[in-house]
Amino acid sequence: MTAAAQHPEAVVFDGQPLDIEAIDAIAHGTRRAELSTDQRFRERIDAGARAVLQLLTDDGVIYGVTTGYGESCTVPVPPAQIAELPHHLYAYHGVGMGRLLDAEETRAVLAVRLASLCQGMSGVRHALLQQIEVFLQHDILPCIPAEGSVGASGDLTPLSYVAAALCGERDVLWQGRRMPAKEALEQAGVEPLALQPKEGLAIMNGTAVMTALSCLAWQRAQRCSRIATRLTALNVFATAGNPHHFDTLLFDAKPHPGPRAVARWLRRDLACADEAAGRNPARLQDRYSLRCAPHVIGVLEDALPFTRSLIENELNSANDNPLIDPESGRVLHGGHFYGGHVSFAMDCLKTAVANVLDLLDRQLALLVDSRFSHGLPDNLSAATADRSAINHGLKALQIAVSAWTAEALKMTMPASVFSRSTECHNQDKVSMGTIAARDCQRTLDLGDQVLAAMLIAARQAVTLRLRIDGGSLPPVLADTQAWLEAHIPLVVEDRALDQELMHLVSALRGNSAGNVLESGE
Image (cartoon, rainbow, N blue to C red; front, side, top):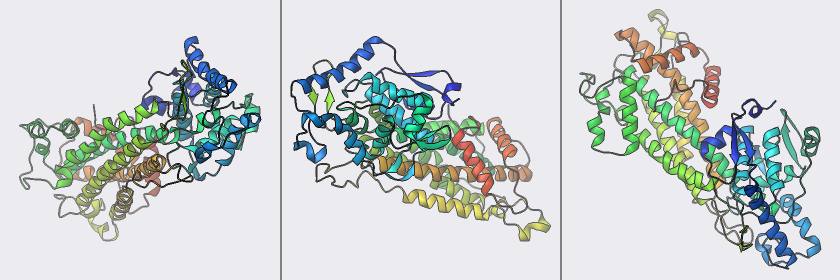
């Protein structure tokens, strides 16, 4: 039984708008994809397919149906060969390389492509939509190489692996095993699809891969923001910092929504009222990585609603070419496969995330240095005095965090500006949207490692602060610290932390901690 089958709530695909959360839920198996059974929806879809066939009957000219592809649009295809053309499209685009998309990413790709085709502007049959639905419901996942798309004319190369798998060709992942698609379909009792004119182009000529990866990246970026805020609260407490830096009146004077929200969450986490906020008399102002945390994390918070709108507009669009108006039968040749908005959203998010990671790296540098931590031991070592000479605390962890942060910062070179002229200069301006999305994912992968390391450091630092000063944690931070203590043994004697880091990264990605690690509403 697949994960989706265990969670019966459906995401209904009927051409109406979907959100990022719906795609993320399908990707992670907590909801299933289901086509609308409304007869009007089915009629609208099939009307587009009939319009294509009528144009063929009337000897009409349709790009990619009666002509070759790309620069070959001037080459007419003999009527007797039109039926073979879709196969040739996905056959010659089978040049993907690199890692394969994982199961979550692949489910998201299928769901996003289905959402676009459900707009009814792609000239495909309802049977094609049903085939994608069957793949999702049986969890038959095409093996899709991550590399090979320039983001216009859409994600041609990676989506060719979807088209081929729907037709019973190439490989799929099914029931935990890679196998030929034909074999998996036979075992699942699913007939391979025979593509009709325009259907190969409709599957491949769109932004499904970049948009799917963007939906998943957006969710991860939001989680990064909320966990970074909670970590900042823990680090303010651990360094005996000044919560009055997050005063309401202060942030009303510079009313960017993101920093105001982060400051509000920090006030709640630290349980401090504005006028009564504790002050450390030894230092009027904390260093920037603590004092300016709302301003740094707040940029990411403000980027989230903006980038959500770009991603969801793409998700709910018909983005192949040409489009077919199912009512009038008009053929609309254009460039909706261009992934510029997704590319920009991903470049934006990865830069904001990398800045947050840099903030956390600087906070860790304060925590491990007794000159700046207001009484915490060097490297947050919890070793007793007679063992301190040979124990090194979190010295190496801080070095590793600095390495991961540096790599994340290096990733912020925007992919969207690296357009290349391809395909005989037909595709002479391209979006690089899928590369941008993969870059953002890599930044977030590094971010998960930084967050995991910071959780270890916060657990250590807060414990040591309580030992030094006594007292107790505010309620919200106490819950977080209790979770950390249950999952991370205090580092007293030197030990390898790699396995603990991997377990924490898995917990972050699987959200097994729920909201206990996150600030927010």
